Image (cartoon, rainbow, N blue to C red; front, side):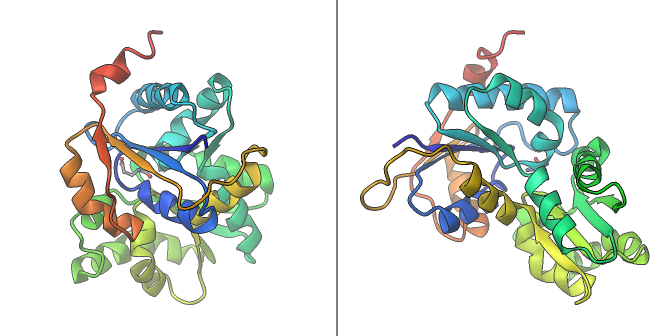
Length: 270
Ligand code: DGL
């Protein structure tokens, strides 16, 4: 059975894989985490696009059924190029998150939190305004939340303080819906929900993407017998990924293999 290709700048994309496992339990997944070159959030759109094209071609060469761009920063920077270049469907996280937020909002004021790259791209604004030009979007880059999650500090008081600081300008603008526009933020769902308060609906772009994938998957593949086998590929040493994976995936990963970045760099010449 051809796998679903999923890629991310590193480990956070496992929050999307977790939802795919839940919603599409029969599908084998080939996950690619670019752990040697993370983070993508502070990098230029040009660099993120170059890395994303390389990884997409790498996955296509492994005969994936579709490509899920689990990384918000990569989806913001590179999705149109990847869609143009891929013979199989390419699904990003922005449109599913935006659709869910547009459905949920009552006041029409939607907050978006993500990396600097995602917020600077304006990708969520464009997606939301394409759905309804009357929607108002307030965005905030929250770069410190990424290392706090990776440090395992989801429940730490410092993290709550940082979340308060970042959400303050959004809450002042009376958002009633908040998009978690970064792979790492579903891990902080409880503290973000607590700070945002009951009046704010939290939209998890990872979950919405898995739902959209169920609709977008090309038909015709027979379901596998028994549990599907998944593969996890990374560009840095596998042991760190293996150690941190459970935090994002909710389950341990067994097989993690290494791919050298040199192998990727030869893939796209232009
Ligand atoms: N995966 C990235 C995203 O969702 C967050 C981590 C990074 O900056 O690479 O935007």
